[in-house]
Length: 210
Image (cartoon, rainbow, N blue to C red; front, side):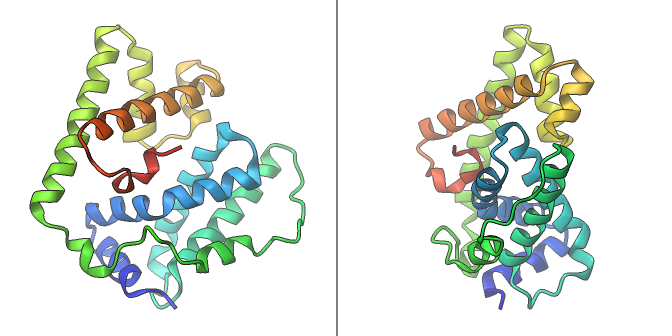
């Protein structure tokens, strides 16, 4: 059964609440990334597969029964996306005896998951978090402009504003996929360092960890 917190989250997402999308990303991206990395072992593709998992969830939202366990559903989508990626890479998915791992992970308690009541954090705290993130992003962009690294700036826009996959960004900007993966990692580290300096808990932005 889905938790009350998850049911509230799904309802908010269906109401086009942008904060709810940020919350589902915060709540599950870290665990999905860890799961995909273990199965795929191709770090350059991990972010793409996780992003495709969220896109798959968005596409299935109209038919999603909110009485169903959200965590299990997300990990099931992730498992299919991993299989698709392995086939693209010419690798056959191998049964390891842990094929139900996504279900186990989905059912496991998530110590970072906040109760439904905490979804309505104080406006003051949300403003502080959003302000710190906005400042970190502006400083990151300013650094690239100062160094005339416009290709990197365009790559970040394609990845984080338009949601493009690493391979699509690489093709558009004539970069290697490894270069794009490295850029994504470096940008996350810059943001993480700035948010840490703002004395915000890393739990608020788990997608910037690792």
